[in-house]
Image 1 (tube, rainbow, N blue to C red):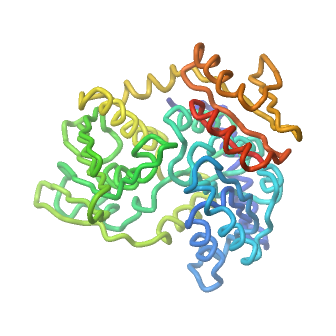
Image 2: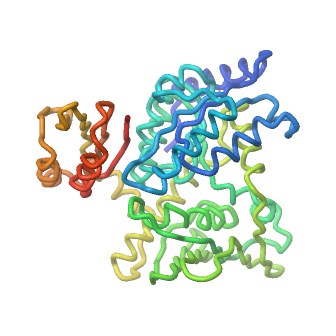
Image 3: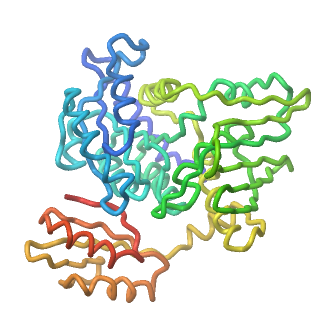
Length: 407
């Protein structure tokens, strides 16, 4: 889908505001949403290092909103440690995304749980602040499509990428291959699973993005073979080239690519840390232009979603177009569930508001699922219900999808 003239004009307004900030005496202020990943201390240390690359001197990470998803221990168990790191590094800790956004010029959305990204990004889009969203861009293909739709509607630029994209050898294969035109690629990476995410979104995305970096954006179909120890996903590109992703869950799991070219075969892929990605992120904040196209990013997530569809169909080939169409047609209901000081729950789905007891939550979700494919819920727990009640509530809401947690 092409950006309309009006959206392009809106984007230029955002770009001018970015350029004007960077031209001022003060640094371009960055805020972090989601102190739940090791990327946060790594990014803060690199950008705020006074002895770092020249481009980093134009930027300063100044604030953080902790965030976190209580039903995902890979998120919830990290938030205290990384929030404390940020506070010790001199960042101001904000109670809400909105407060953070008001006091910065751009956003690094770092929540490790991709389900939260769409809702956490909405105040950023509304405030016209450019944002980088760490992997995975969203918790579903529909979320990814909705994020790009918001970007176009508001004229706010958005960029996402795995740090693996900027391994020098992958970029070289993409732009100036030493082995001639790339005819195919086999990419590998770790692929541990997280039950709250589509299977490859959680970590397999690194290897999938490596594959797309080398092969380009135009994959049309995939088929998948799954075992507990590994995944093999075979993609067919528009020009009939074949690209393979192997996700590894047992044994040694390197980041690597074997690239097949017209003039030879090369094994590439030594990981080079976060700095190459951070250089691109800072360039993005300078220019307002993402170095990765919307179409390529959507196809990366459609590839992973189609792989899940193929698994359900016992390895049948599934087109990316099928995956995108299914996501676009998905009937969703988003519910805000607000806790009370009596440990009750106010359910508001936009057309109906009702007060529920703890044991009523599961039935409310099941009733909603009779009319919708997916029930997303925002859990507003600023009342601070007891931990055991929260845990039981999350169990009752298991068949719905957490979209944000506010506390």
